[in-house]
Every structure is written in structure tokens, then in C-alpha cells.
Length: 216
Figure 1 (cartoon, helix red, strand yellow):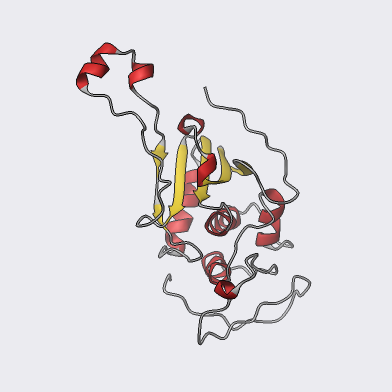
Figure 2 (cartoon, helix red, strand yellow):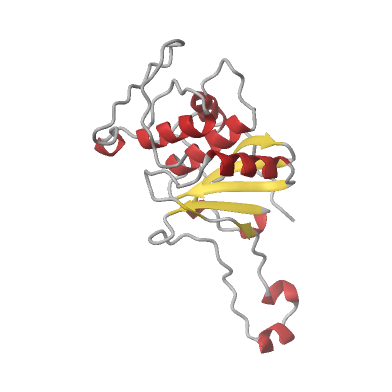
């Protein structure tokens, strides 16, 4: 039986799996990788990890041989592992996935029933980027609201960390964000040679010169 998670809204940074929103019949969550110890809580897991370096990929902890399978009841010899769609996504970066791919994913999730968790190492940058895209393409966000601001109210105030992720969300969703990335360091600086301006949250008009990425 799956655990009933709390759907309480957060004030600051989340601890443990955090409910973000419902999309059709799917219940969408975000989390840090280290907080996902019970695989049976989930019907679908979407890790957003650097598959070459990150070590938190979900896996079955049991390795019974045939003798053990014959000896033990199935609930002891076999561990439940949900469907896992791993996305190769380096930390602080963006994936090489097109808008069409995200649109198809959202359409699938709208018809999927169960708990779906997106997660990365910290549950902020990559997870926040993915959740913002899914919520926007799923038409959950009122037109008058900034998609990132809306997601931070629903999920975590630290969601989406870098300008590269910021640009990627705008490109995939074809919307404009009015809230800054949360990661304030040299890594969050705009890519070298790019001419990108980021309007304040209160601005509602004006055009930005957008960076061209390799994910169209």
C-alpha cells in the first residue's frame, strides 16, 4: 500500500518528497534523491541525474538466486521497483530534449494515474526546471502569473537555480519568466558571449533578446 504523503504547502525549502500539483490523474511530486528510500511509494520515478557521475539511481536492493526465489515468499524475495524514466541531465545544466518531447510527456502524464516523482541531487535546479515546464505545458498556471513564481509557491522557494535553466524553461514553454534563478554564484552567470537580460518580477512589458540554445 502506498504511503499517503502530506500535501501541505511549504514556506521555505522542502524536506522530503514535496507534493507540487495534480496533472490530470497524476499526482506530481519533487524531491531530493536521498529522500526516496521507499520505492513502493511511487508509480513512476523520473530521475534527473548525470548518469555518468550521480550515484543515486533507484535500483532493486535484492539479488535473490533461483534457490532463494523458490524458498522465500514473493514479498520477501522480490522488491517492488516502479517504472523509471531516467533523464541524463548534468547538475546546473539543461537536457538535450526538445519542446515536442516535453509536450508528449505532459500528454502522457495527464492520462497516467498515480504518484509521479521528479528528483535530482538537491531537488532544486533540475527538478524545479522540469516541474515548471510540466506545469506550464499542462496549462495549470494562470496567464497573469509567472510560471516560476507559481511553482515556487507550490513546491519550493529554491526551485530552478541557473540562468541556463531559466532560458531553457522560456524556450520550451514559450513563456516569459519574471522571477530570478535562485543560485547566486558565478555558475549562475549567463553563458559567455550571450546577450541576455532578465526583467524584474514587476515588469510586464518589453522584449528580451533571447539566447539560442541547442534544444530546438
